[in-house]
Length: 318
Ligand code: NAD
Ligand code: UDP
Ligand code: UDP
Image (tube, rainbow, N blue to C red):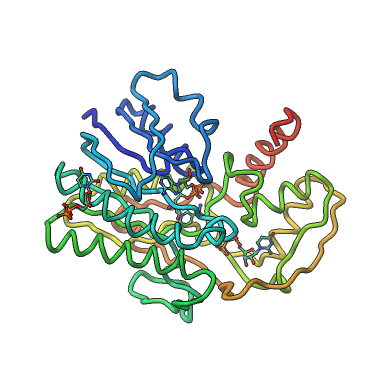
């Protein structure tokens, strides 16, 4: 195997930490860059003893000079409560962060991967979502810092590709969950599991009839690795997610059943611009990424995630 020097921005976050682990296990040198905005050193503590792993506290909105062969750009808070906490910083992270990482890739002639999102489709009017769909995004709403920041990052990736011949790989990631999500992350899977384990009411927003499609983190990371390994002609955007679609109410009921919790459901107002439905069409990923498709069903992935959060609670870490 070809040993590479690989930069992972946002590497101390939920998805990033799993990616770093995979890359180090495969024998690569990994430089993990993170400002710990939503991630933490704890997520990568188990990698610190490995001489091929290096951790750097750095904010990607500032230039970074590092000698690497490949870049995975994941830096960006992903949970609505976190990306809405400091929306200006969220847009800066997506846009200035992309410019800096693309500048780095250009200087190094490094291949660069962008963690884009299903949020580029906004509140979609076509279902399931295909990559050709341009989306239905409110440019001035409370989700816009994230949605438009990620859309602008995609624009920058494609312009660096056309103008500077950069090798780019853009993945549009759909809701992903698993161990190392922050217990206070605010996203639905971590919220529901923590509430169920603590016997607190499950906070269902709206009537819970909105849908999402949940992908287990290991399946997603496998998709990242396969996309990065494709030939120069493959740029994406490529949807990566699990097509299994569930209402949020059904998710709440699954979590309660699987945890054996006595929690009841409490209804809270639906946040504005909350997409009503979301399901990836993954035909492109299957065709271009050696028949990539998720292998871990929601029930199975939830069991692993519940075990993780249960461990955190029992050890006093959450
Ligand atoms: P996360 O919040 O756990 O991870 C994001 C990481 O980026 C954190 O470690 C955070 O500290 C770091 N970060 C934020 N701003 C930074 C900055 N300015 N400089 C350096 N580091 C910074 O979220 P995640 O779920 O692991 O998401 C990872 C990436 O995948 C994000 O880009 C997100 O938009 C994208 N994504 C995730 C999902 C999902 O469901 N998990 C879905 C779509 C897209
Ligand atoms: N950049 C970086 N690391 C590098 C090379 C560039 O962070 O190794 C930053 C640089 O500071 C610049 C951005 O990336 O702001 C875009 O670089 P590019 O070369 O595209 O543009 P220019 O430097 O001409 O503005
Ligand atoms: N949601 C909910 N209760 C919560 C957190 C989220 O009902 O405690 C809903 C939220 O309104 C949305 C869905 O679950 O419809 C997914 O929310 P999340 O924040 O995980 O991701 P996103 O909206 O970005 O897909």
